[in-house]
Length: 431
Image 1 (tube, rainbow, N blue to C red):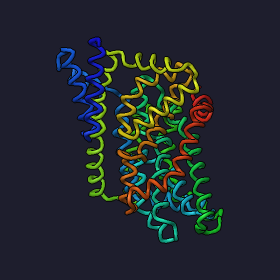
Image 2: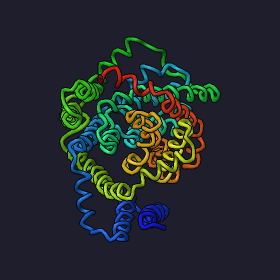
Image 3: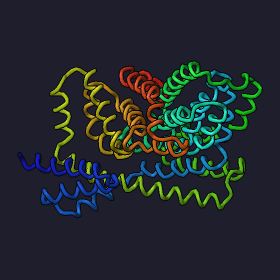
Image 4: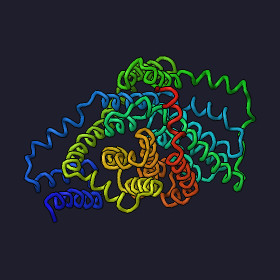
């Protein structure tokens, strides 16, 4: 075995062993990188240099702002208003509360950008409401956790900012625009699945549709939805960068939560900021440690080796695209979302572009793959949160989620093989 081959083995095997031993992912990434550097005889000052380099990015500053915006809006009385708006839109359908859950997640995801926050915030309200109206608790939880993945696609999503940084120069504005149609397609797919199940189980309908009620709820929810408009229109229109838009959105969300909706007082604001610091510290540790891992992968030419290995298996672009999705889905079963984006993007993006997949389209693919991973055992964070919020055993939740897994995979295949779904809006508005 060559020196490079042995170093790659040290890097990857030690990383997998620590993952299996349930090490915190940031420690597993950092320690395996250190072992690799020691084996190569490189100075450990490289670790510090790469960690600092990994977080020294202006675009990365958008991440803490978006996280703060999500925390403030999520705790500021927004959830109730978005649920009422969703109820006015789709509550009249068979399985109305399931439809409300899915549509509310689409609205709320555009504010929080986090599947975990969506599940914890909306789930704590909607799951008990659904159970009280006669829905099974495992079905209610399954709808909640799967629909929460819409928030990963609907802008503003801090995971898209992380991908843009990892991909090296992909437009954040294009990624934001690219997420709308796939997010809506995912919502429609989940609604179809919910409708079929609701028909079979005779779940109830809600109130009849009323245009007057819809207009009233839309007016009440305007201030919440305007935050998304500020961010997306500002970035796409070129008025400010993603980082600047995120900072403006934080100030706006503070004003809306404290002075307009009055869901937060100043004590609550400080408590939310403390939670944001906790979340942000985890994200930055992951990014900095993943930067060392990425440095090791690059210097050992692992992306080139991986590309040659995959292309050596087949030169059929359809099979290669399917293989990329299989790899990402497998990683989603054992790793959290941010590390997958940070580690897999430099390796898999060159392969994707070699078969004609646009970097923006691939960003949507990797985000949805990671979203499905958040729902799969043994590491699925959203699966655990949903199980805890719904007070349902995880085994029952997984079983109830199986039809929705199928809906999500169908959407994933459509996004993979129909580029226009992701690329229509960016091509229309960003040129």
